Length: 248
View (tube, one colour):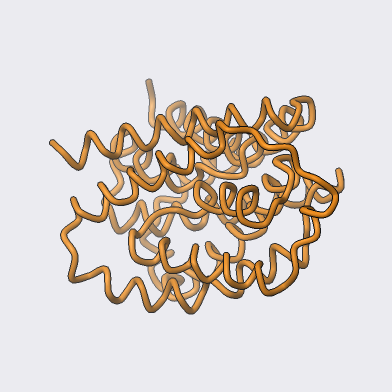
């Protein structure tokens, strides 16, 4: 397959994951850019942030049009996580990469297990105050900064389990959180954008955006429990792959 074909196919998969599950962007994009398209790790990280930010913002619009974004909760969640992610990221430099990867795999597996136990959300549980949003966002920011990954794959379980947000709305709200985090992380890297191979990143981003629109249509057709189970299976798959990589 040509580089262009691989970029188009990988972008479509990333977009579908983000649009349907509200997660999976960077965890799919970075490996695809490095192992399929030959990017260096530095190029892949910068390009991934560009792709994920653009795709997530597009998907947020689609979910918002369908009334599946909790703006106040998402903004509080994202804002609370940014400073703790920065501080935890500084601490992570002293920890071995295998320890960090294994820790995330265990955490992701625990989150997947919790999602598989589908709970009915009562009207009383739906009202989550700003205090819980800020606390959950700060906790997620700490974990994301410490482990170097996370984003939507941890935001969705936090939104559903801690804040009792229904799964369909958690997907859309997670995309808002991902967008904020990706843009914030991209700002210090704007000087590196000139080194990004735009001939490959452009088509990748285009199909990711189109895939995100298709993904949100899939999310709209699935019931809350079915969508939650699909997300849990995807999360468990990622956790298993990361744990295997940490142990090798």
